[in-house]
Image 1 (cartoon, rainbow, N blue to C red):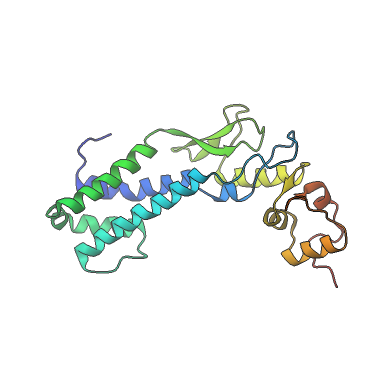
Image 2 (image 1 turned 45 degrees about the vertical axis):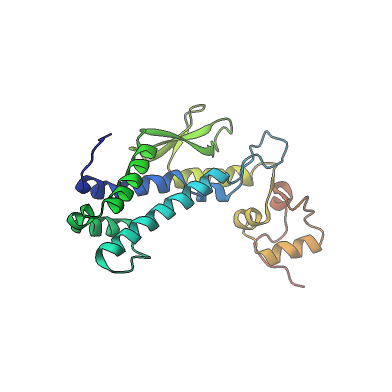
Length: 223
């Protein structure tokens, strides 16, 4: 890692670093709670708080960069994407250099982002949907998740799809939102099935076995 990067280097790297951090804090993979089929049926994997915190911190730091760009241009950059912010900082590098505190903030954010994404591979919080035994490792260059236990490899989309397949074919208990998303139900339809005795939720969770056996799955039952 360059210990003294120029503002030009920093601005050129910011968009790529930001995208890497988005990949590492991708909450879509956590949106579906996953329990391996060989477990007892309780939820073994939910949205980790540290992932949520990491995304919030990333967005706060992008907000700082937007504020700095606003100081340099006297313009509100509240919704400006990171690549446009980087362009503004690069175009006003001379002015930024005249504001030591602001430049120090840019360098601080850049240094943290660079440190986080520096490894070629990073162990994620996502349990492998293929074997359910190990956490997937994200490989930056390949943009693939790989399992160190069973050697499964897939993109973020592949992992999400396989996880959905595993859940729908397993004997596990899932949340109301997951039940609706994976079994083509609306919340109203789910309520109708409960009222008719087709489903018997337990502590707010629903059995995938019962969900698979629902009559007329995907439709709202008539009153």
